[in-house]
Image (cartoon, rainbow, N blue to C red; front, side):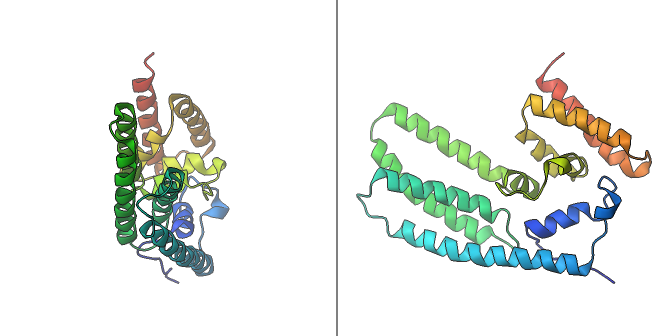
Length: 225
């Protein structure tokens, strides 16, 4: 029977798809039934519905901010908007409109924060650095793999990190590895080589060995011998 996949899956369905027919996962995790797929899609839909309700409330709070609102209230709301953007990156369907709306709300709030900084040069520098960091973070979240790895409730278990990374598409892989520091990369390389050596050597692992080679090259570049 042909499986009915979503065009733009959420995090539950994506994780099933990572395992589906993937030789890097244990054999009993590679098969996928329509029932399992439907359940994952149901969970993704529930998360989407809950998110939309929460986002509407959050947007209402942002719009209702007064011109003389306390700074701690403004900063707390900004932090919640940042988290709402992260959550949108993990959801099913096209979340571009919601992301754009959040960015506009953050921009409005940041104008108030900038006004509060006044002519304080140090405060202005910190705000500039914060905005650059937020922009870079949001760009990273365009990768669904990155969004899923950074999820506080990530479905990717620690034991699944190696097969997930080594079977990722090239672009997703290159972005995801930037999340790890040199010591973490070294551990991933060592664990990854041991993991692949424990599997049967055949053509199905060629891409995984290439990914591992890329990791080793990246590690050598950031930590010269």
